[in-house]
Image (cartoon, rainbow, N blue to C red; front, side, top):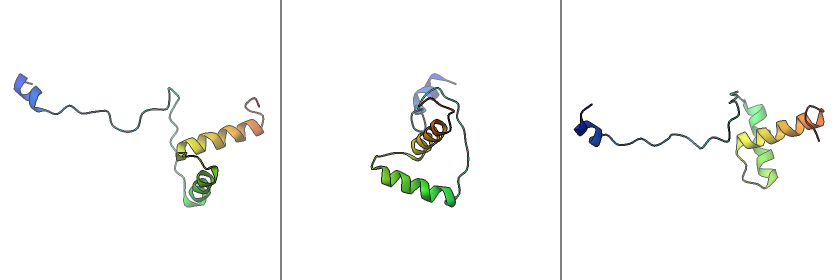
Length: 71
């Protein structure tokens, strides 16, 4: 690539939201029978939660209740 081409190309920024940490990404598909209650949980929480954060909190609570995480 010539110097002229380098100066003409716009610099691309990073795409997407900032990562939440170094954890492993788990991708799953949720249907309306789970999304609707999840969205209601988010509204009822009174916090500005994202769906991923609401899922993390629900999973953490479930795992604590079942004894897989310390209380």
